Amino acid sequence: MTPQRKDAARNWEHILTVARELVDEGTPLQLNDVARRAGLGVGTIYRHFPTTEALLETVATPCLEALAGHGEQALTHDDPWKAFADFLTRLVEGQVTDPALVKVAATAQDVLPRTTELKAQILATGAKLLARARDAGTVRPDVHDDDLVPLMCGISYATYVHSAGPADRLATARRYLETLLRGLHA
Amino acid sequence: MTPQRKDAARNWEHILTVARELVDEGTPLQLNDVARRAGLGVGTIYRHFPTTEALLETVATPCLEALAGHGEQALTHDDPWKAFADFLTRLVEGQVTDPALVKVAATAQDVLPRTTELKAQILATGAKLLARARDAGTVRPDVHDDDLVPLMCGISYATYVHSAGPADRLATARRYLETLLRGLHA
DNA sequence: CCTGGAAACGGATAGCTCATCCGTATGTGT
DNA sequence: ACACATACGGATGAGCTATCCGTTTCCAGG
Image: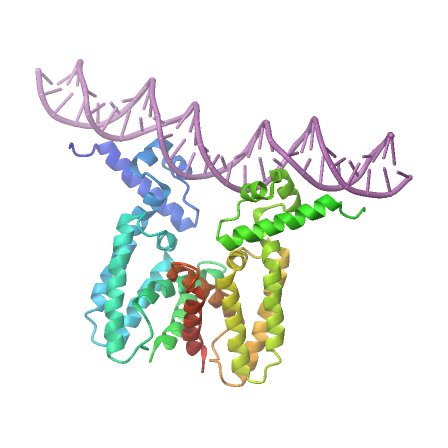
């Protein structure tokens, strides 16, 4: 196995940059667009990223990794409730800030291996935080691990339904999460 | 202006029936499918319904009307909080029971006139119920009218993310709504 | 340098779905 | 029965995803 050729590496980076731009603009990320804006042929894009979702996953992965990292960090907090609440806040803020996260979160299990892995990791961390908070008696006992991801997605979705532009999204999301947290608190 | 021809009226009904079936099956409602299953040409579908969304709207309208009706009824309840909570419950139950509602709710303003109208009506009712409950001191004062629809959509979305099949959807939705209501309660 | 061949590129092309258009068929008032 | 508006059907075009293969580019080894 020869190491990758330099032009290929350069193009890979370039494609990713362009894709990130398009995602941030809110455009639906069509590979023909990416090709045109990157000044490359469509074939080049598809060689680097077999499907649209694969490209999207690569775009979203750094953010997902950051979220997973924040989770690990939250585990070191002293106050179980605060740790739990802070983690959820991070998750929601990530989702409403980065459209790519919403899309990969909505993608079915197992079509995006790295995403699936990171989601599992985040879920596991969330479960630990939840268990700690529940054991401390600060979270109602009927909240299940499997509820965390859906609820975060629900908050993000509600935020997108509510907001006209991206300007007030963060504020709205925080408000909704606050309400939810009050509902989860014992 | 001559009244509609009989075959056209019959086909209109037939298209709607088939569309309802497809929606209930969870299929994405593609007009070619509708045409095939109805034994009609594609053109016929498009003459009756200019776009996929228009057909979807017509499918969803009766349910939306029912929800609007329930709202009017809720206004006659004595207990302001119970009236409010019951109305939200109806909304959520409708959304998780009928996939068409979720789709029309997510569609942008003004592309579906009838839907826009009914959503406005439901929102107005919700606003009244919310105001009553807030005045009675049973709902936190920082909940705004515009939050109701997004929050209901968020609950439905969370439910769809959580549930494997349609079987446990209602239970999940009720659980999530309960949590939200606790968060909204003063 | 320069050259051979693997690696990467580009864009023509196939397949799919949505939507349109128009020649044909059908229903309806006279 | 006839004429003509109304409605029907499916061929057709447009846009997007994804593939395939002839051409170009990179990069060791001589």
